[in-house]
Amino acid sequence: MNEPMFTVEQDSKKDNSGTFIISPLEQGYGATLGTSLRRVLLTSLPGVAVTSVRISGVKHQFSTLKGMREDVVEFLLNLKKVRFSYEGQEAVKGAISVKSAGEVKAKDIKVPANVKIANPELVLANLDKGGRIEAELVIERGSGYSFAEERATGEIGLIPLDSAFSPVTRVNYKVEETRVGRLTNYDKLLLEITTDATLNPKDALALAAKTLLSYYEQIVNPKKVVKAEEKKVDSLGAVGNLSVEEIGLPTRVANALVRAGYETVENLSKAKKEDLIKVRNLGEKSIKIISLALGERGVKFPEEQSK
Image (tube, rainbow, N blue to C red; front, side, top):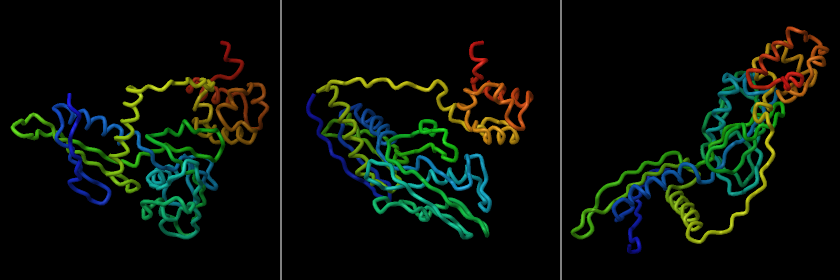
């Protein structure tokens, strides 16, 4: 097979989107390139997102904040939509401090000088008179999609977020027939790329191609792979990091546990029933309620674990 000879032209450009024409391609290579480039563009390009939040006066995401019209979950969902430009590799911190009535926007996030907010007019929340919001954010660079459970620490008040790092929001492709001389069995690939404005479509396409090239290079000229030691995984996993307020316990029971120092499922999994009964405002009935709530998540008290 001859060396591939084709051109890549940008047919249209609108703000943060562009359409590229890749042609002429050998028959079948339109779909081959279209499928592989689309997958890499959507899942593998690095980007920046908020990964965790600490809100003053809020212990967990299923809360409300006095003076804010939105509940905390809605505020966090809006926060996940904020897009950042940042070339560094280390995590950085941002902060929100708004004490007046009105809209709280992405531009109200105070970030280091080397971090830029691509959608500053995005509304995060609405404050009523007397309302205020104080929050600290952790902003990180990553790729693909990262689940909050991967960063759960069990620390009360620190809320990890699901984070979509990819700067590419949409990719469509279409393959058409094209002519080369008298032959009509060549492919023309039309690739439409839309980004979040932190990366232009042309650079996104080049970066995706380089990513694929690095994988193919490992097939052609393989480098020795050194196996990393497997990390010991906590048997409770993400469940152990849940706070007692998040497992459906009555408020009275949850508050009594927190005051006694049993703030997470992991804490409870190590507690003996005889010690919990001694906690103020807890009794045999409360212990049964706690045991049922833990059982729904596959967790038992120490004395039950051998049964």
